[in-house]
Length: 555
Image (tube, rainbow, N blue to C red; front, side, top):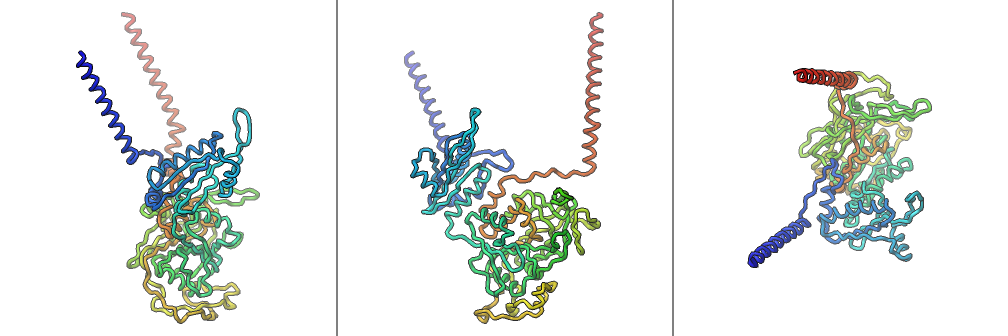
């Protein structure tokens, strides 16, 4: 009996040891290799692959310190959500040191030091137990690397936290920042102009120190500054001279990236009457592989609402000149657009790709198959009649990649020109690319004789869009598209996947008139008929059961 007890006891101990060892091994491996399933469509509880790539390639320790109060409850909840996000970061990198600090334990000197860092003490209203009071709290994050430190002063939610964290990590670990230049001198979108201050603030906020913003003028005949990585030509309303086009061409030949946002029409002030606009860029762009359509597009199926004055009221009405691009009509392969869901392009023209040797053209966005081209006089009021024409899908944004050949190969360098009396009066040739401006006076520039034209370009990218007006609208979808484009050209695809991580648009599926009528009659007639049929079936079943009961009861 004793031997049996010893035997069974030994087996029990051995079995317990084996189970403990298995659990220990599972725990050990799960800390290094784990599987999670995020069932939300936008994967809102999972950091993006872009973030994983950034934190996995860190070459030194990045310190993330979260300064969060533990009370009241609403701040404690945000603190918990932030901890979940940072735990996700920590799981994919051994180069992160993450600490949570409660500044309530700080003395006055430490709190003053925290304010000096840029993390303020906030006052929030708290309602608890039928009592309202003001609480002093901290909700900031510090990111440090190799003696550099950046601050997220106030984190009120985790909605955009991944982008904020990853872009800040990239900023503190970057060896150098790049420059994005905006061409000026032709009534473009000038980031330094007071009228575009809100646009500039959005750019500064999203740049997060990844790149600097500057204005670029080419009217003096000097080359684009070599520190500029990406040049933006957005909404020029006056012709670009041959010399300026030459400097843009040579910038591309040196490997510079360019975004061309070219308007097809010029709206008359205070009206919705448009006239054709020529910037002189058509021949240059066609040489690179993008042919601008001298037209305006509408989409008879997918278009957005626009704001109009109606008497003393402001109303929103469907407007076919505000072409709406939906997800199936974006390029699924290109990193700029593969996560976008919608984009509204006001008053856009078509951009057709032209085959060029060594150049890859990718249509980034297209209208639906119900797109229509309009040319001639542009009456853009919402009630203006639109003639019937052939319907087809039109490309409205095009990306070109490769080694471009110079438009000015084997040509003389165009001279710098001053405005003549004709241009000063506001009269310009229809196409600046066709000939030099009438009355141009060549102006010598330093070292002009030493300059040579670079005929063969380095590997680079160009993006061409048939409108710049989406920047003026300041819609989130348009800003995201523009920022994705700037990021792709300037930084690669490191941040694009994060910015597009949150679902922003859920349009209802378009249905045909037949489907609409079917649904309408099913609701108005079909459902009452089903109720009547159910009642009749129930009535006859009960009647049959009653007869059966009566028949058996009489036996």
